[in-house]
Length: 200
Length: 200
Image 1: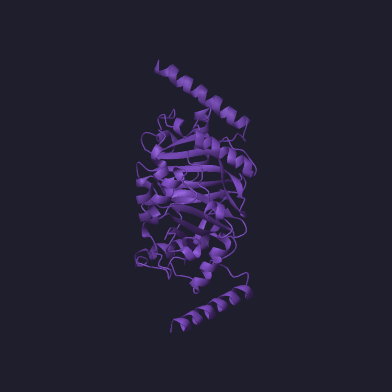
Image 2 (image 1 turned 30 degrees about the horizontal axis):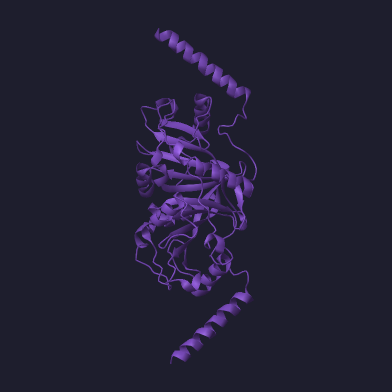
């Protein structure tokens, strides 16, 4: 019995690996490219606003990562702009993460650290077109440090939640594999890309 | 006596106005242009880190705006990237601002709203060069809604604090004049450029 489960696992892993190799450009996030117009932003804002009441069913990813609803009240760790993806991002941390960041108790990041990255499509601010600002939500990506629980994925739980409805990627495990692949070379920084921004 | 003070005020205003006209490119912020290297970022990070203990004398701007030390624990209102200034920004709000933002009780923003914008020079993330991320701190710019107290400046107190040491611009009043000049056309949005980002 144990052996056949192991076999199924190996087959699944091979299938996922093959899919990844066959399609190296497979997007981890369900991203739209290009610069958003004011109309598109307004449409997205209305959609967000009218759906505020229906988001809040508790959700959990297949790897047991919950969606931490309180993340909006977390603090800023950094921001980023991806010119290749034409998207803006903010990176926030829970209390464990912020304590470590502010006191330089990292790397490694302490057990229980959660890092949340919110990704938006870019738009131009109509009142100041040189400024690129957030438009529609693309996704929320998270890392949850639980060394033993996530020993198979660098000691971090990875999850990605798409769009307003926080839907999980169709092939969640393949998405996590892609996360791991990009983060794996960063052993020196405990597999984290973000460095805390200077907030004096 | 009252008349001579008024005269001095008028002369000062004319001098400031002349200085502004003579130098239209006068930067509101003490900004460095260009993309920062990893070495510059490391130098800035060390400078920040070694000076953490000396920032915290209470400070107040000439227009009675205090520097709110607690801003680091405020929540994210939005982010922005200024391609012309090669800088990244995060905009945070105090509790009054966030309650208004999340419930769409704006514009106008309620009395007591404080909006803080942190500006950083950009750098390329060495581990992912397509990502532009914060380097050295440029400045912190703030708006404080007190309709009566700041009736002369659109109902908002404006202040700018430069670099790690939070120094005030040499000619603070001229800086505020520049703030007002750019924000004045935005009556429809209560003189605020930032629109809250979608944080589902």
